Length: 278
Ligand SMILES: CC(C)(COP(=O)(O)OP(=O)(O)OC[C@H]1O[C@@H](n2cnc3c(N)ncnc32)[C@H](O)[C@@H]1OP(=O)(O)O)[C@@H](O)C(=O)NCCC(=O)NCCS
Image 1 (cartoon, helix red, strand yellow):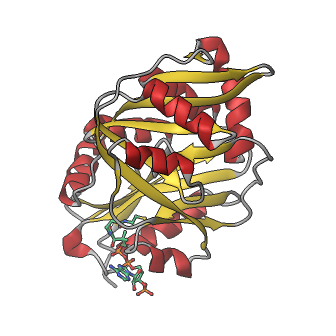
Image 2 (spheres, helix red, strand yellow; image 1 turned 120 degrees about the vertical axis):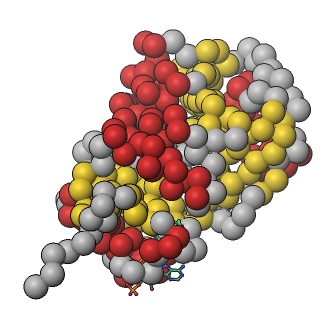
Image 3 (cartoon, helix red, strand yellow; image 1 turned 180 degrees about the vertical axis):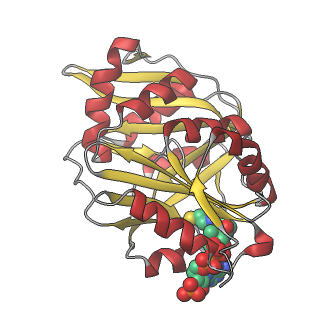
């Protein structure tokens, strides 16, 4: 009997450089620090050959009480189609057993997720481009303070479906957060941070397109801006296009395995923090 030449182990901080190198090979935009943030917030598996060379990775992030997201699923191009992606994802599903799992699937990833019980529930469109505007003052929008975290998390949970305070705390520390207040309190929030080729505006959580647009205008800085927005609303993406951003690449499928906690009525997600974290 021959030993299994593939080692599927838990991802470690020491894998960061190899994961970053694989991201570059696949021409994904993430910087080393973007991947470090993902790894700090989550866990996952790497596939290595007998010499310890990284061949693939799959990360996941758990959210209270029973939800998780899967992301950064990559296999080195020279060893794709040999079952490595399937083994990585199957292992992550075993590691996260009991949780509903959500992800954004590329065209290449979809056949794998189809066979593992994921179903498509929507789509996400990436807008990007050079933004010429400056952050705009808005009397109803202010910079978030650290004591806003609980309120922001509560609002986010109604839109996301599961509590993700730890993720939001790290994203808020990494970027700039704005809260939109109406007469009744905080009615929306957004975070902008450095990511990939420039900056990303997301999450944006609001009740109406008009408020999502106000939050975008309050935070977006001139330069390369990316926004990942669930397909469904019209006015918010139309505003992005009017500002010089354009849809990039094919839409990604939103896929879910198990029963994702139902969001409450009211605020919804107009932009994701990233494909990985949602
Ligand atoms: C998607 C990806 C991770 C799959 O990893 P992999 O090791 O090549 O996949 P596997 O060999 O385990 O194949 C899994 C299944 O997907 C199918 N599949 C894999 N790549 C495919 C492709 N490019 N097109 C169509 N089907 C594909 C295979 O038929 C296979 O099914 P089978 O086991 O019944 O034969 C890999 O192709 C990759 O890194 N792609 C680029 C990055 C990416 O798109 N990641 C997905 C993010 S959601």
